Length: 76
Image (tube, rainbow, N blue to C red):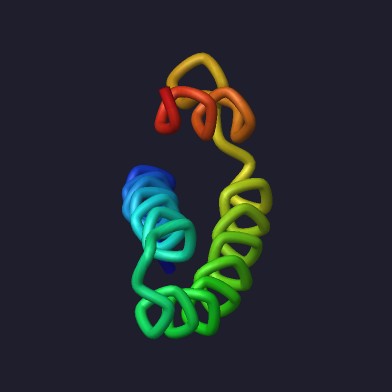
């Protein structure tokens, strides 16, 4: 079983990759855009699973951030 800290790290890495893929989708290279569009669907599914794992881990919010707050922090 993953620790809460490990789940948070995976969430951060997944969100950063989703951001990178979104930049490729928005880019001028049509081939890269299409490929990124296919891959981002898998990362979105992974992000949902990680959110579920994080919430199920019942983190101590005195130590760990709330999920939505953490996503906002990553995307700043």
